[in-house]
Amino acid sequence: MIEVDDVTVTVEGRNLLENVSAVCLPGTLTALVGPNGAGKSTLLSVIAGDRKGTRGTVMLAGRDVASYSVRDLAQIRSVFPQGSVIRFGYTVEEVVAMGRAFRDLPPEDDQRAVFDAMVASEVDHMAFRNAQTLSGGEQARTTFARVVVQATPIVLLDEPTAALDLRHQEKVLAAARDMARAGATVVAVLHDLNLAAAYADKVVLLENGRVAADGTPWDVLRQDLIETVYRQDVRILEHPVRGCPVVLTT
Image (spheres, rainbow, N blue to C red):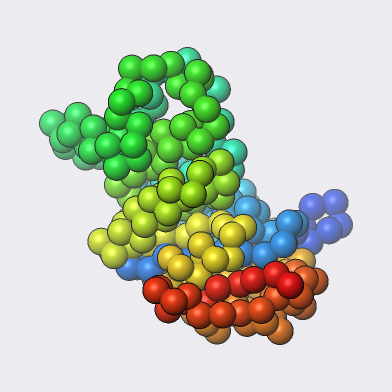
């Protein structure tokens, strides 16, 4: 479980986050959405323990994130970073295997876990390529495979679909939802409201560092809220197959 309580992040007199509270339960995928500069990535970094809040607390599995050592954090949460650019000349297989490096998992399972993660992310055919020679989307899929192979109970994804084509956007979020269905607590920063609507159990809408709405996709992705927060005229329809909201600009 993730419990965010009254978190504020202040930098040079400006609040990047202000009095943010949210709860993310095991077995669910929560989407953090909002306009550019709303505080989505800042909130995710505070949850991950990579950034300290000015005020407030974040609890991971009932324990203050600030109390975890780096190694302990590696046992409980995995992070897909924004951009996901690979800056070192290892092979794809080696990059994915790094997800197991600090995990207290049976080493005899490592090879199978790495292979399965590469297959699921469709990078297995590039296993021996230098990861720096990959396209942006291929690097993103490699990074996602590294997250998958870490097999943590908390999974934090910062714009995991940003560099991906249509097929792989769907595959990555389907995999994230599968991790949630298997019991993980998954939080993803997403810009695409329709992907959030299709895959998230809960949506947290941020505006200027504050929570504007928190609830199911139908609760949050409402015409009045979206038009106010994004300052864009929209219409909300029901997806003919998925039954979730579809956000259309007008």
